[in-house]
Image (cartoon, rainbow, N blue to C red; front, side, top):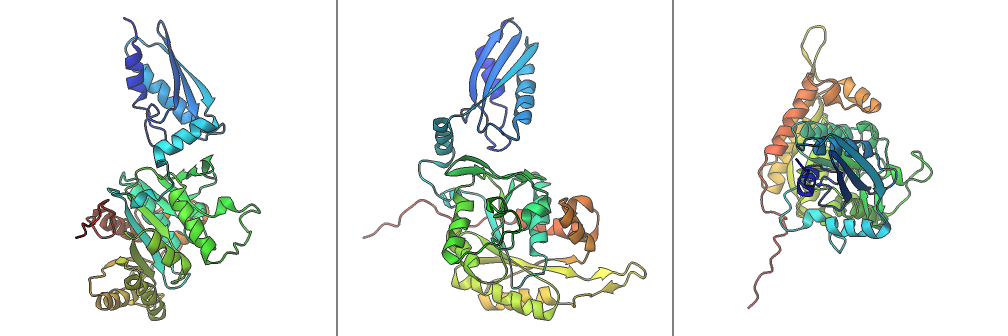
Length: 377
């Protein structure tokens, strides 16, 4: 029984590039196919020479083609796209003009901007662990580390690889624990301790680049880890992503909650919806007697929720109260997220419950570009 070329291409159509997340036949990665008796030779284009996922691609091609009846041997040869082929790939994925794909008509990605009034409330740790918890449910998740000055997401996810640059207008974000993430860190030529000295326009430009130059694929959820307060990045996020929703993080302390309310009060002025409030470092059970300990006070999350609900005229729910757990900090330093290392802990279960609420929220039409123009008389 002879092996048909159609059968081989059909098998290759099931091979998904792990970074582009499209079939390799669809994005021009199949260079050629040769059939000699029971041996099939597949030549594959890599986007760049040092592609970190080349072993995965080779394995997946071999497995897919080996399933064809009559195939005994599969040989995979690798080549690298030239500049013209990479440009063609970029235009195929992004279109001829650079734009933020999340704003295109029909985009179904839910976008949440994680904000706080002040630093030190655990906003980045929550962003990281919420993303991993959502990814564990089988959803496609990305994080924009929008805290340009104080980036920390790559370390908390254990990401060491820089993004893969296809050309000057497109890059692929690195991935860990099922979460793709982009940060300022790999763009600092002098290393991680180089300070970022930028004013508002440059901050806006970097954020826009993270959204338009990065190929995110078809995400279900995009999270943005905002810097504390109501400065340039918070305002730029609302303008660049009008459909994004704010999630305010606070601790139970009244003083912290008061500052968090100010962060939420930015939303009405930039026409941004508030999805809810998360109280972090909430009460936890005493390891000796089991009685709750309010190390950082009590009631801050509910105070933010109630005050913002009254101020904006719509319900701003308290999405969850995350018990204090020192392992949330420890795991963040090791690069293995807390919801993986301590999945059964009360804090991890509380984070996972917030993640479920966010993924179950119906998507409304607010902020969506419908691609239509009102008729004018």
